[in-house]
Length: 107
Image (cartoon, rainbow, N blue to C red):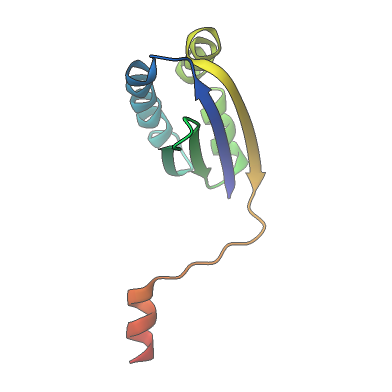
């Protein structure tokens, strides 16, 4: 699995407009083969963190190089972002826990 962590800070006053662009990018990501999930959060200090998961590097690369996504990246640098950091990571280990499933297994 490939996980992309995108942390950003927006220019003042552009959050609502930016969120509309993000909604379109989520649609595109979901349509990309290998897409698994996408979550975005705004922290109390104004930083935004987006986590996108793809099954493999091929899917992540297709998303990264999608023409509409690349145009949005350029627009982000020109208009929306004060700063950003991107980390693209290979998952070395993962574990899962669900309380309901654990309780059922114990009974």
